[in-house]
Amino acid sequence: MPDLPLIHGFGADAVFSYRFGAPISVPQFLQDVQQLATRLPAGGHVINLCADRYRFSVGFAAALVRGHVNLLPPNNTPGLLGQLLDKYPDAYCLADTEHGHTALPTMMFPQLDSTAAKSIDAPLLPERQVAALVLTSGSTGEPVPHRKTWGALVRSARAERSRLGLAALPGAVIVGTVPPQHMYGLESTVLLALQGGFAVHAGRPFYPADVCAELERTPRPRGLVTTPVHLRALLAEDTALPPLDFLVCATAPLSPQLAAAAESRFGVRLHEVYGCTEAGQVATRCTVHTAEWQALEGVSLRQDEHGTWVKGGHVDIETLLGDVIELCGPDRFVLHGRTADLVNIAGKRTSLANLNYHLNSIDGVRDGVFVMPDEQGEGVTRLMAFVVAPDLTTESLMQALRRRIDAAFLPRPLRLVAALPRNSTGKLPRHALVALVAELAAEDR
Image (cartoon, rainbow, N blue to C red; front, side, top):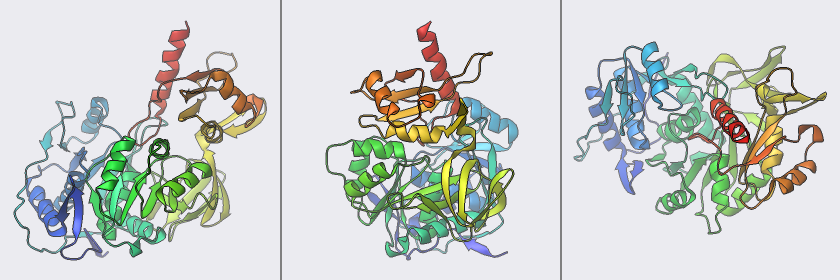
């Protein structure tokens, strides 16, 4: 099998990253990768917890050059890090902040030689080299690692670049609100840059004011890779939003209304990405214009009694998707929600994703989620809803829901909360929702 370059599409003196507003050249990046690779421990699995996206990229690449496998967890809790160390005894951590797990061998990101770098050739890596083990988010249970080869990651990044039409934006800067350890963040903020000739923005702004400030000081062309939660918070701002040259959103279904508002405020078309940790990115759509998803180049889907399977393109191993999907062809489909989200009440069926869509479409709702609690005894288990809506009452919310959903699915109870326990990618892990249900149940006693 052929070897594939670490980076592709860059000019010799192109900018690879913007860090604290200052440009870092491609030669400097390659020199930093070489320097770090020589300093890495002998272990074969590296847990890259660098929050700085440039440092993460250097660490990710250095591990590849050294022949190590990147372990990318959904969080850095001591419990999860301990599980990884038990499963991979040769694991070590590369970090730029303290992580709190004293038993895990840790290398803090070192100070590297920043003298003027000379132009050097990009390393070539075997296509079949295992580049990463990416762990699921744990939103439906225990995190599970999924193997990614370098060839699959390269094909995925190049397919995304082609689908989004980014060849017309050479050197564009990618600003991301999602962590690079997450599959979406890895693909769309790091690998897309490595294989598309784009510049990595080193930060990870979270609050709307910070996102806007970072975009303002980032040269154009520039794009934003974000989530519905971050997008909703940005659109709630009354001030003008910085114009973009591309806008990408993923991790949860996006309503056409929110997508249309984003396109109007940012002045650019929004592309939504559908994927999962198991298969990586699978398809995209322009949400304002269609509900139909188009698979990436070479990717096809088929269905049997078990569900919907995806394979081809960058998806090396046929993978069963965890969603209810209506096929419109081998590479086109409509998404109806997670298989695990289906609910059946009084003989009527819907999905939590559909209910969440209607809840979050109510004016004044900043965030909201339906929850199906675990069954207890022989009593009837009823849907619950938690909503962030400072200017609304439970009565007005219930009235709005009655106009949108069948009465069988009305939440009992509906609780107003200050915030939902979302993780860094905007998802709501099952364990966090269970804890929220328990906490509010205790308050009612």
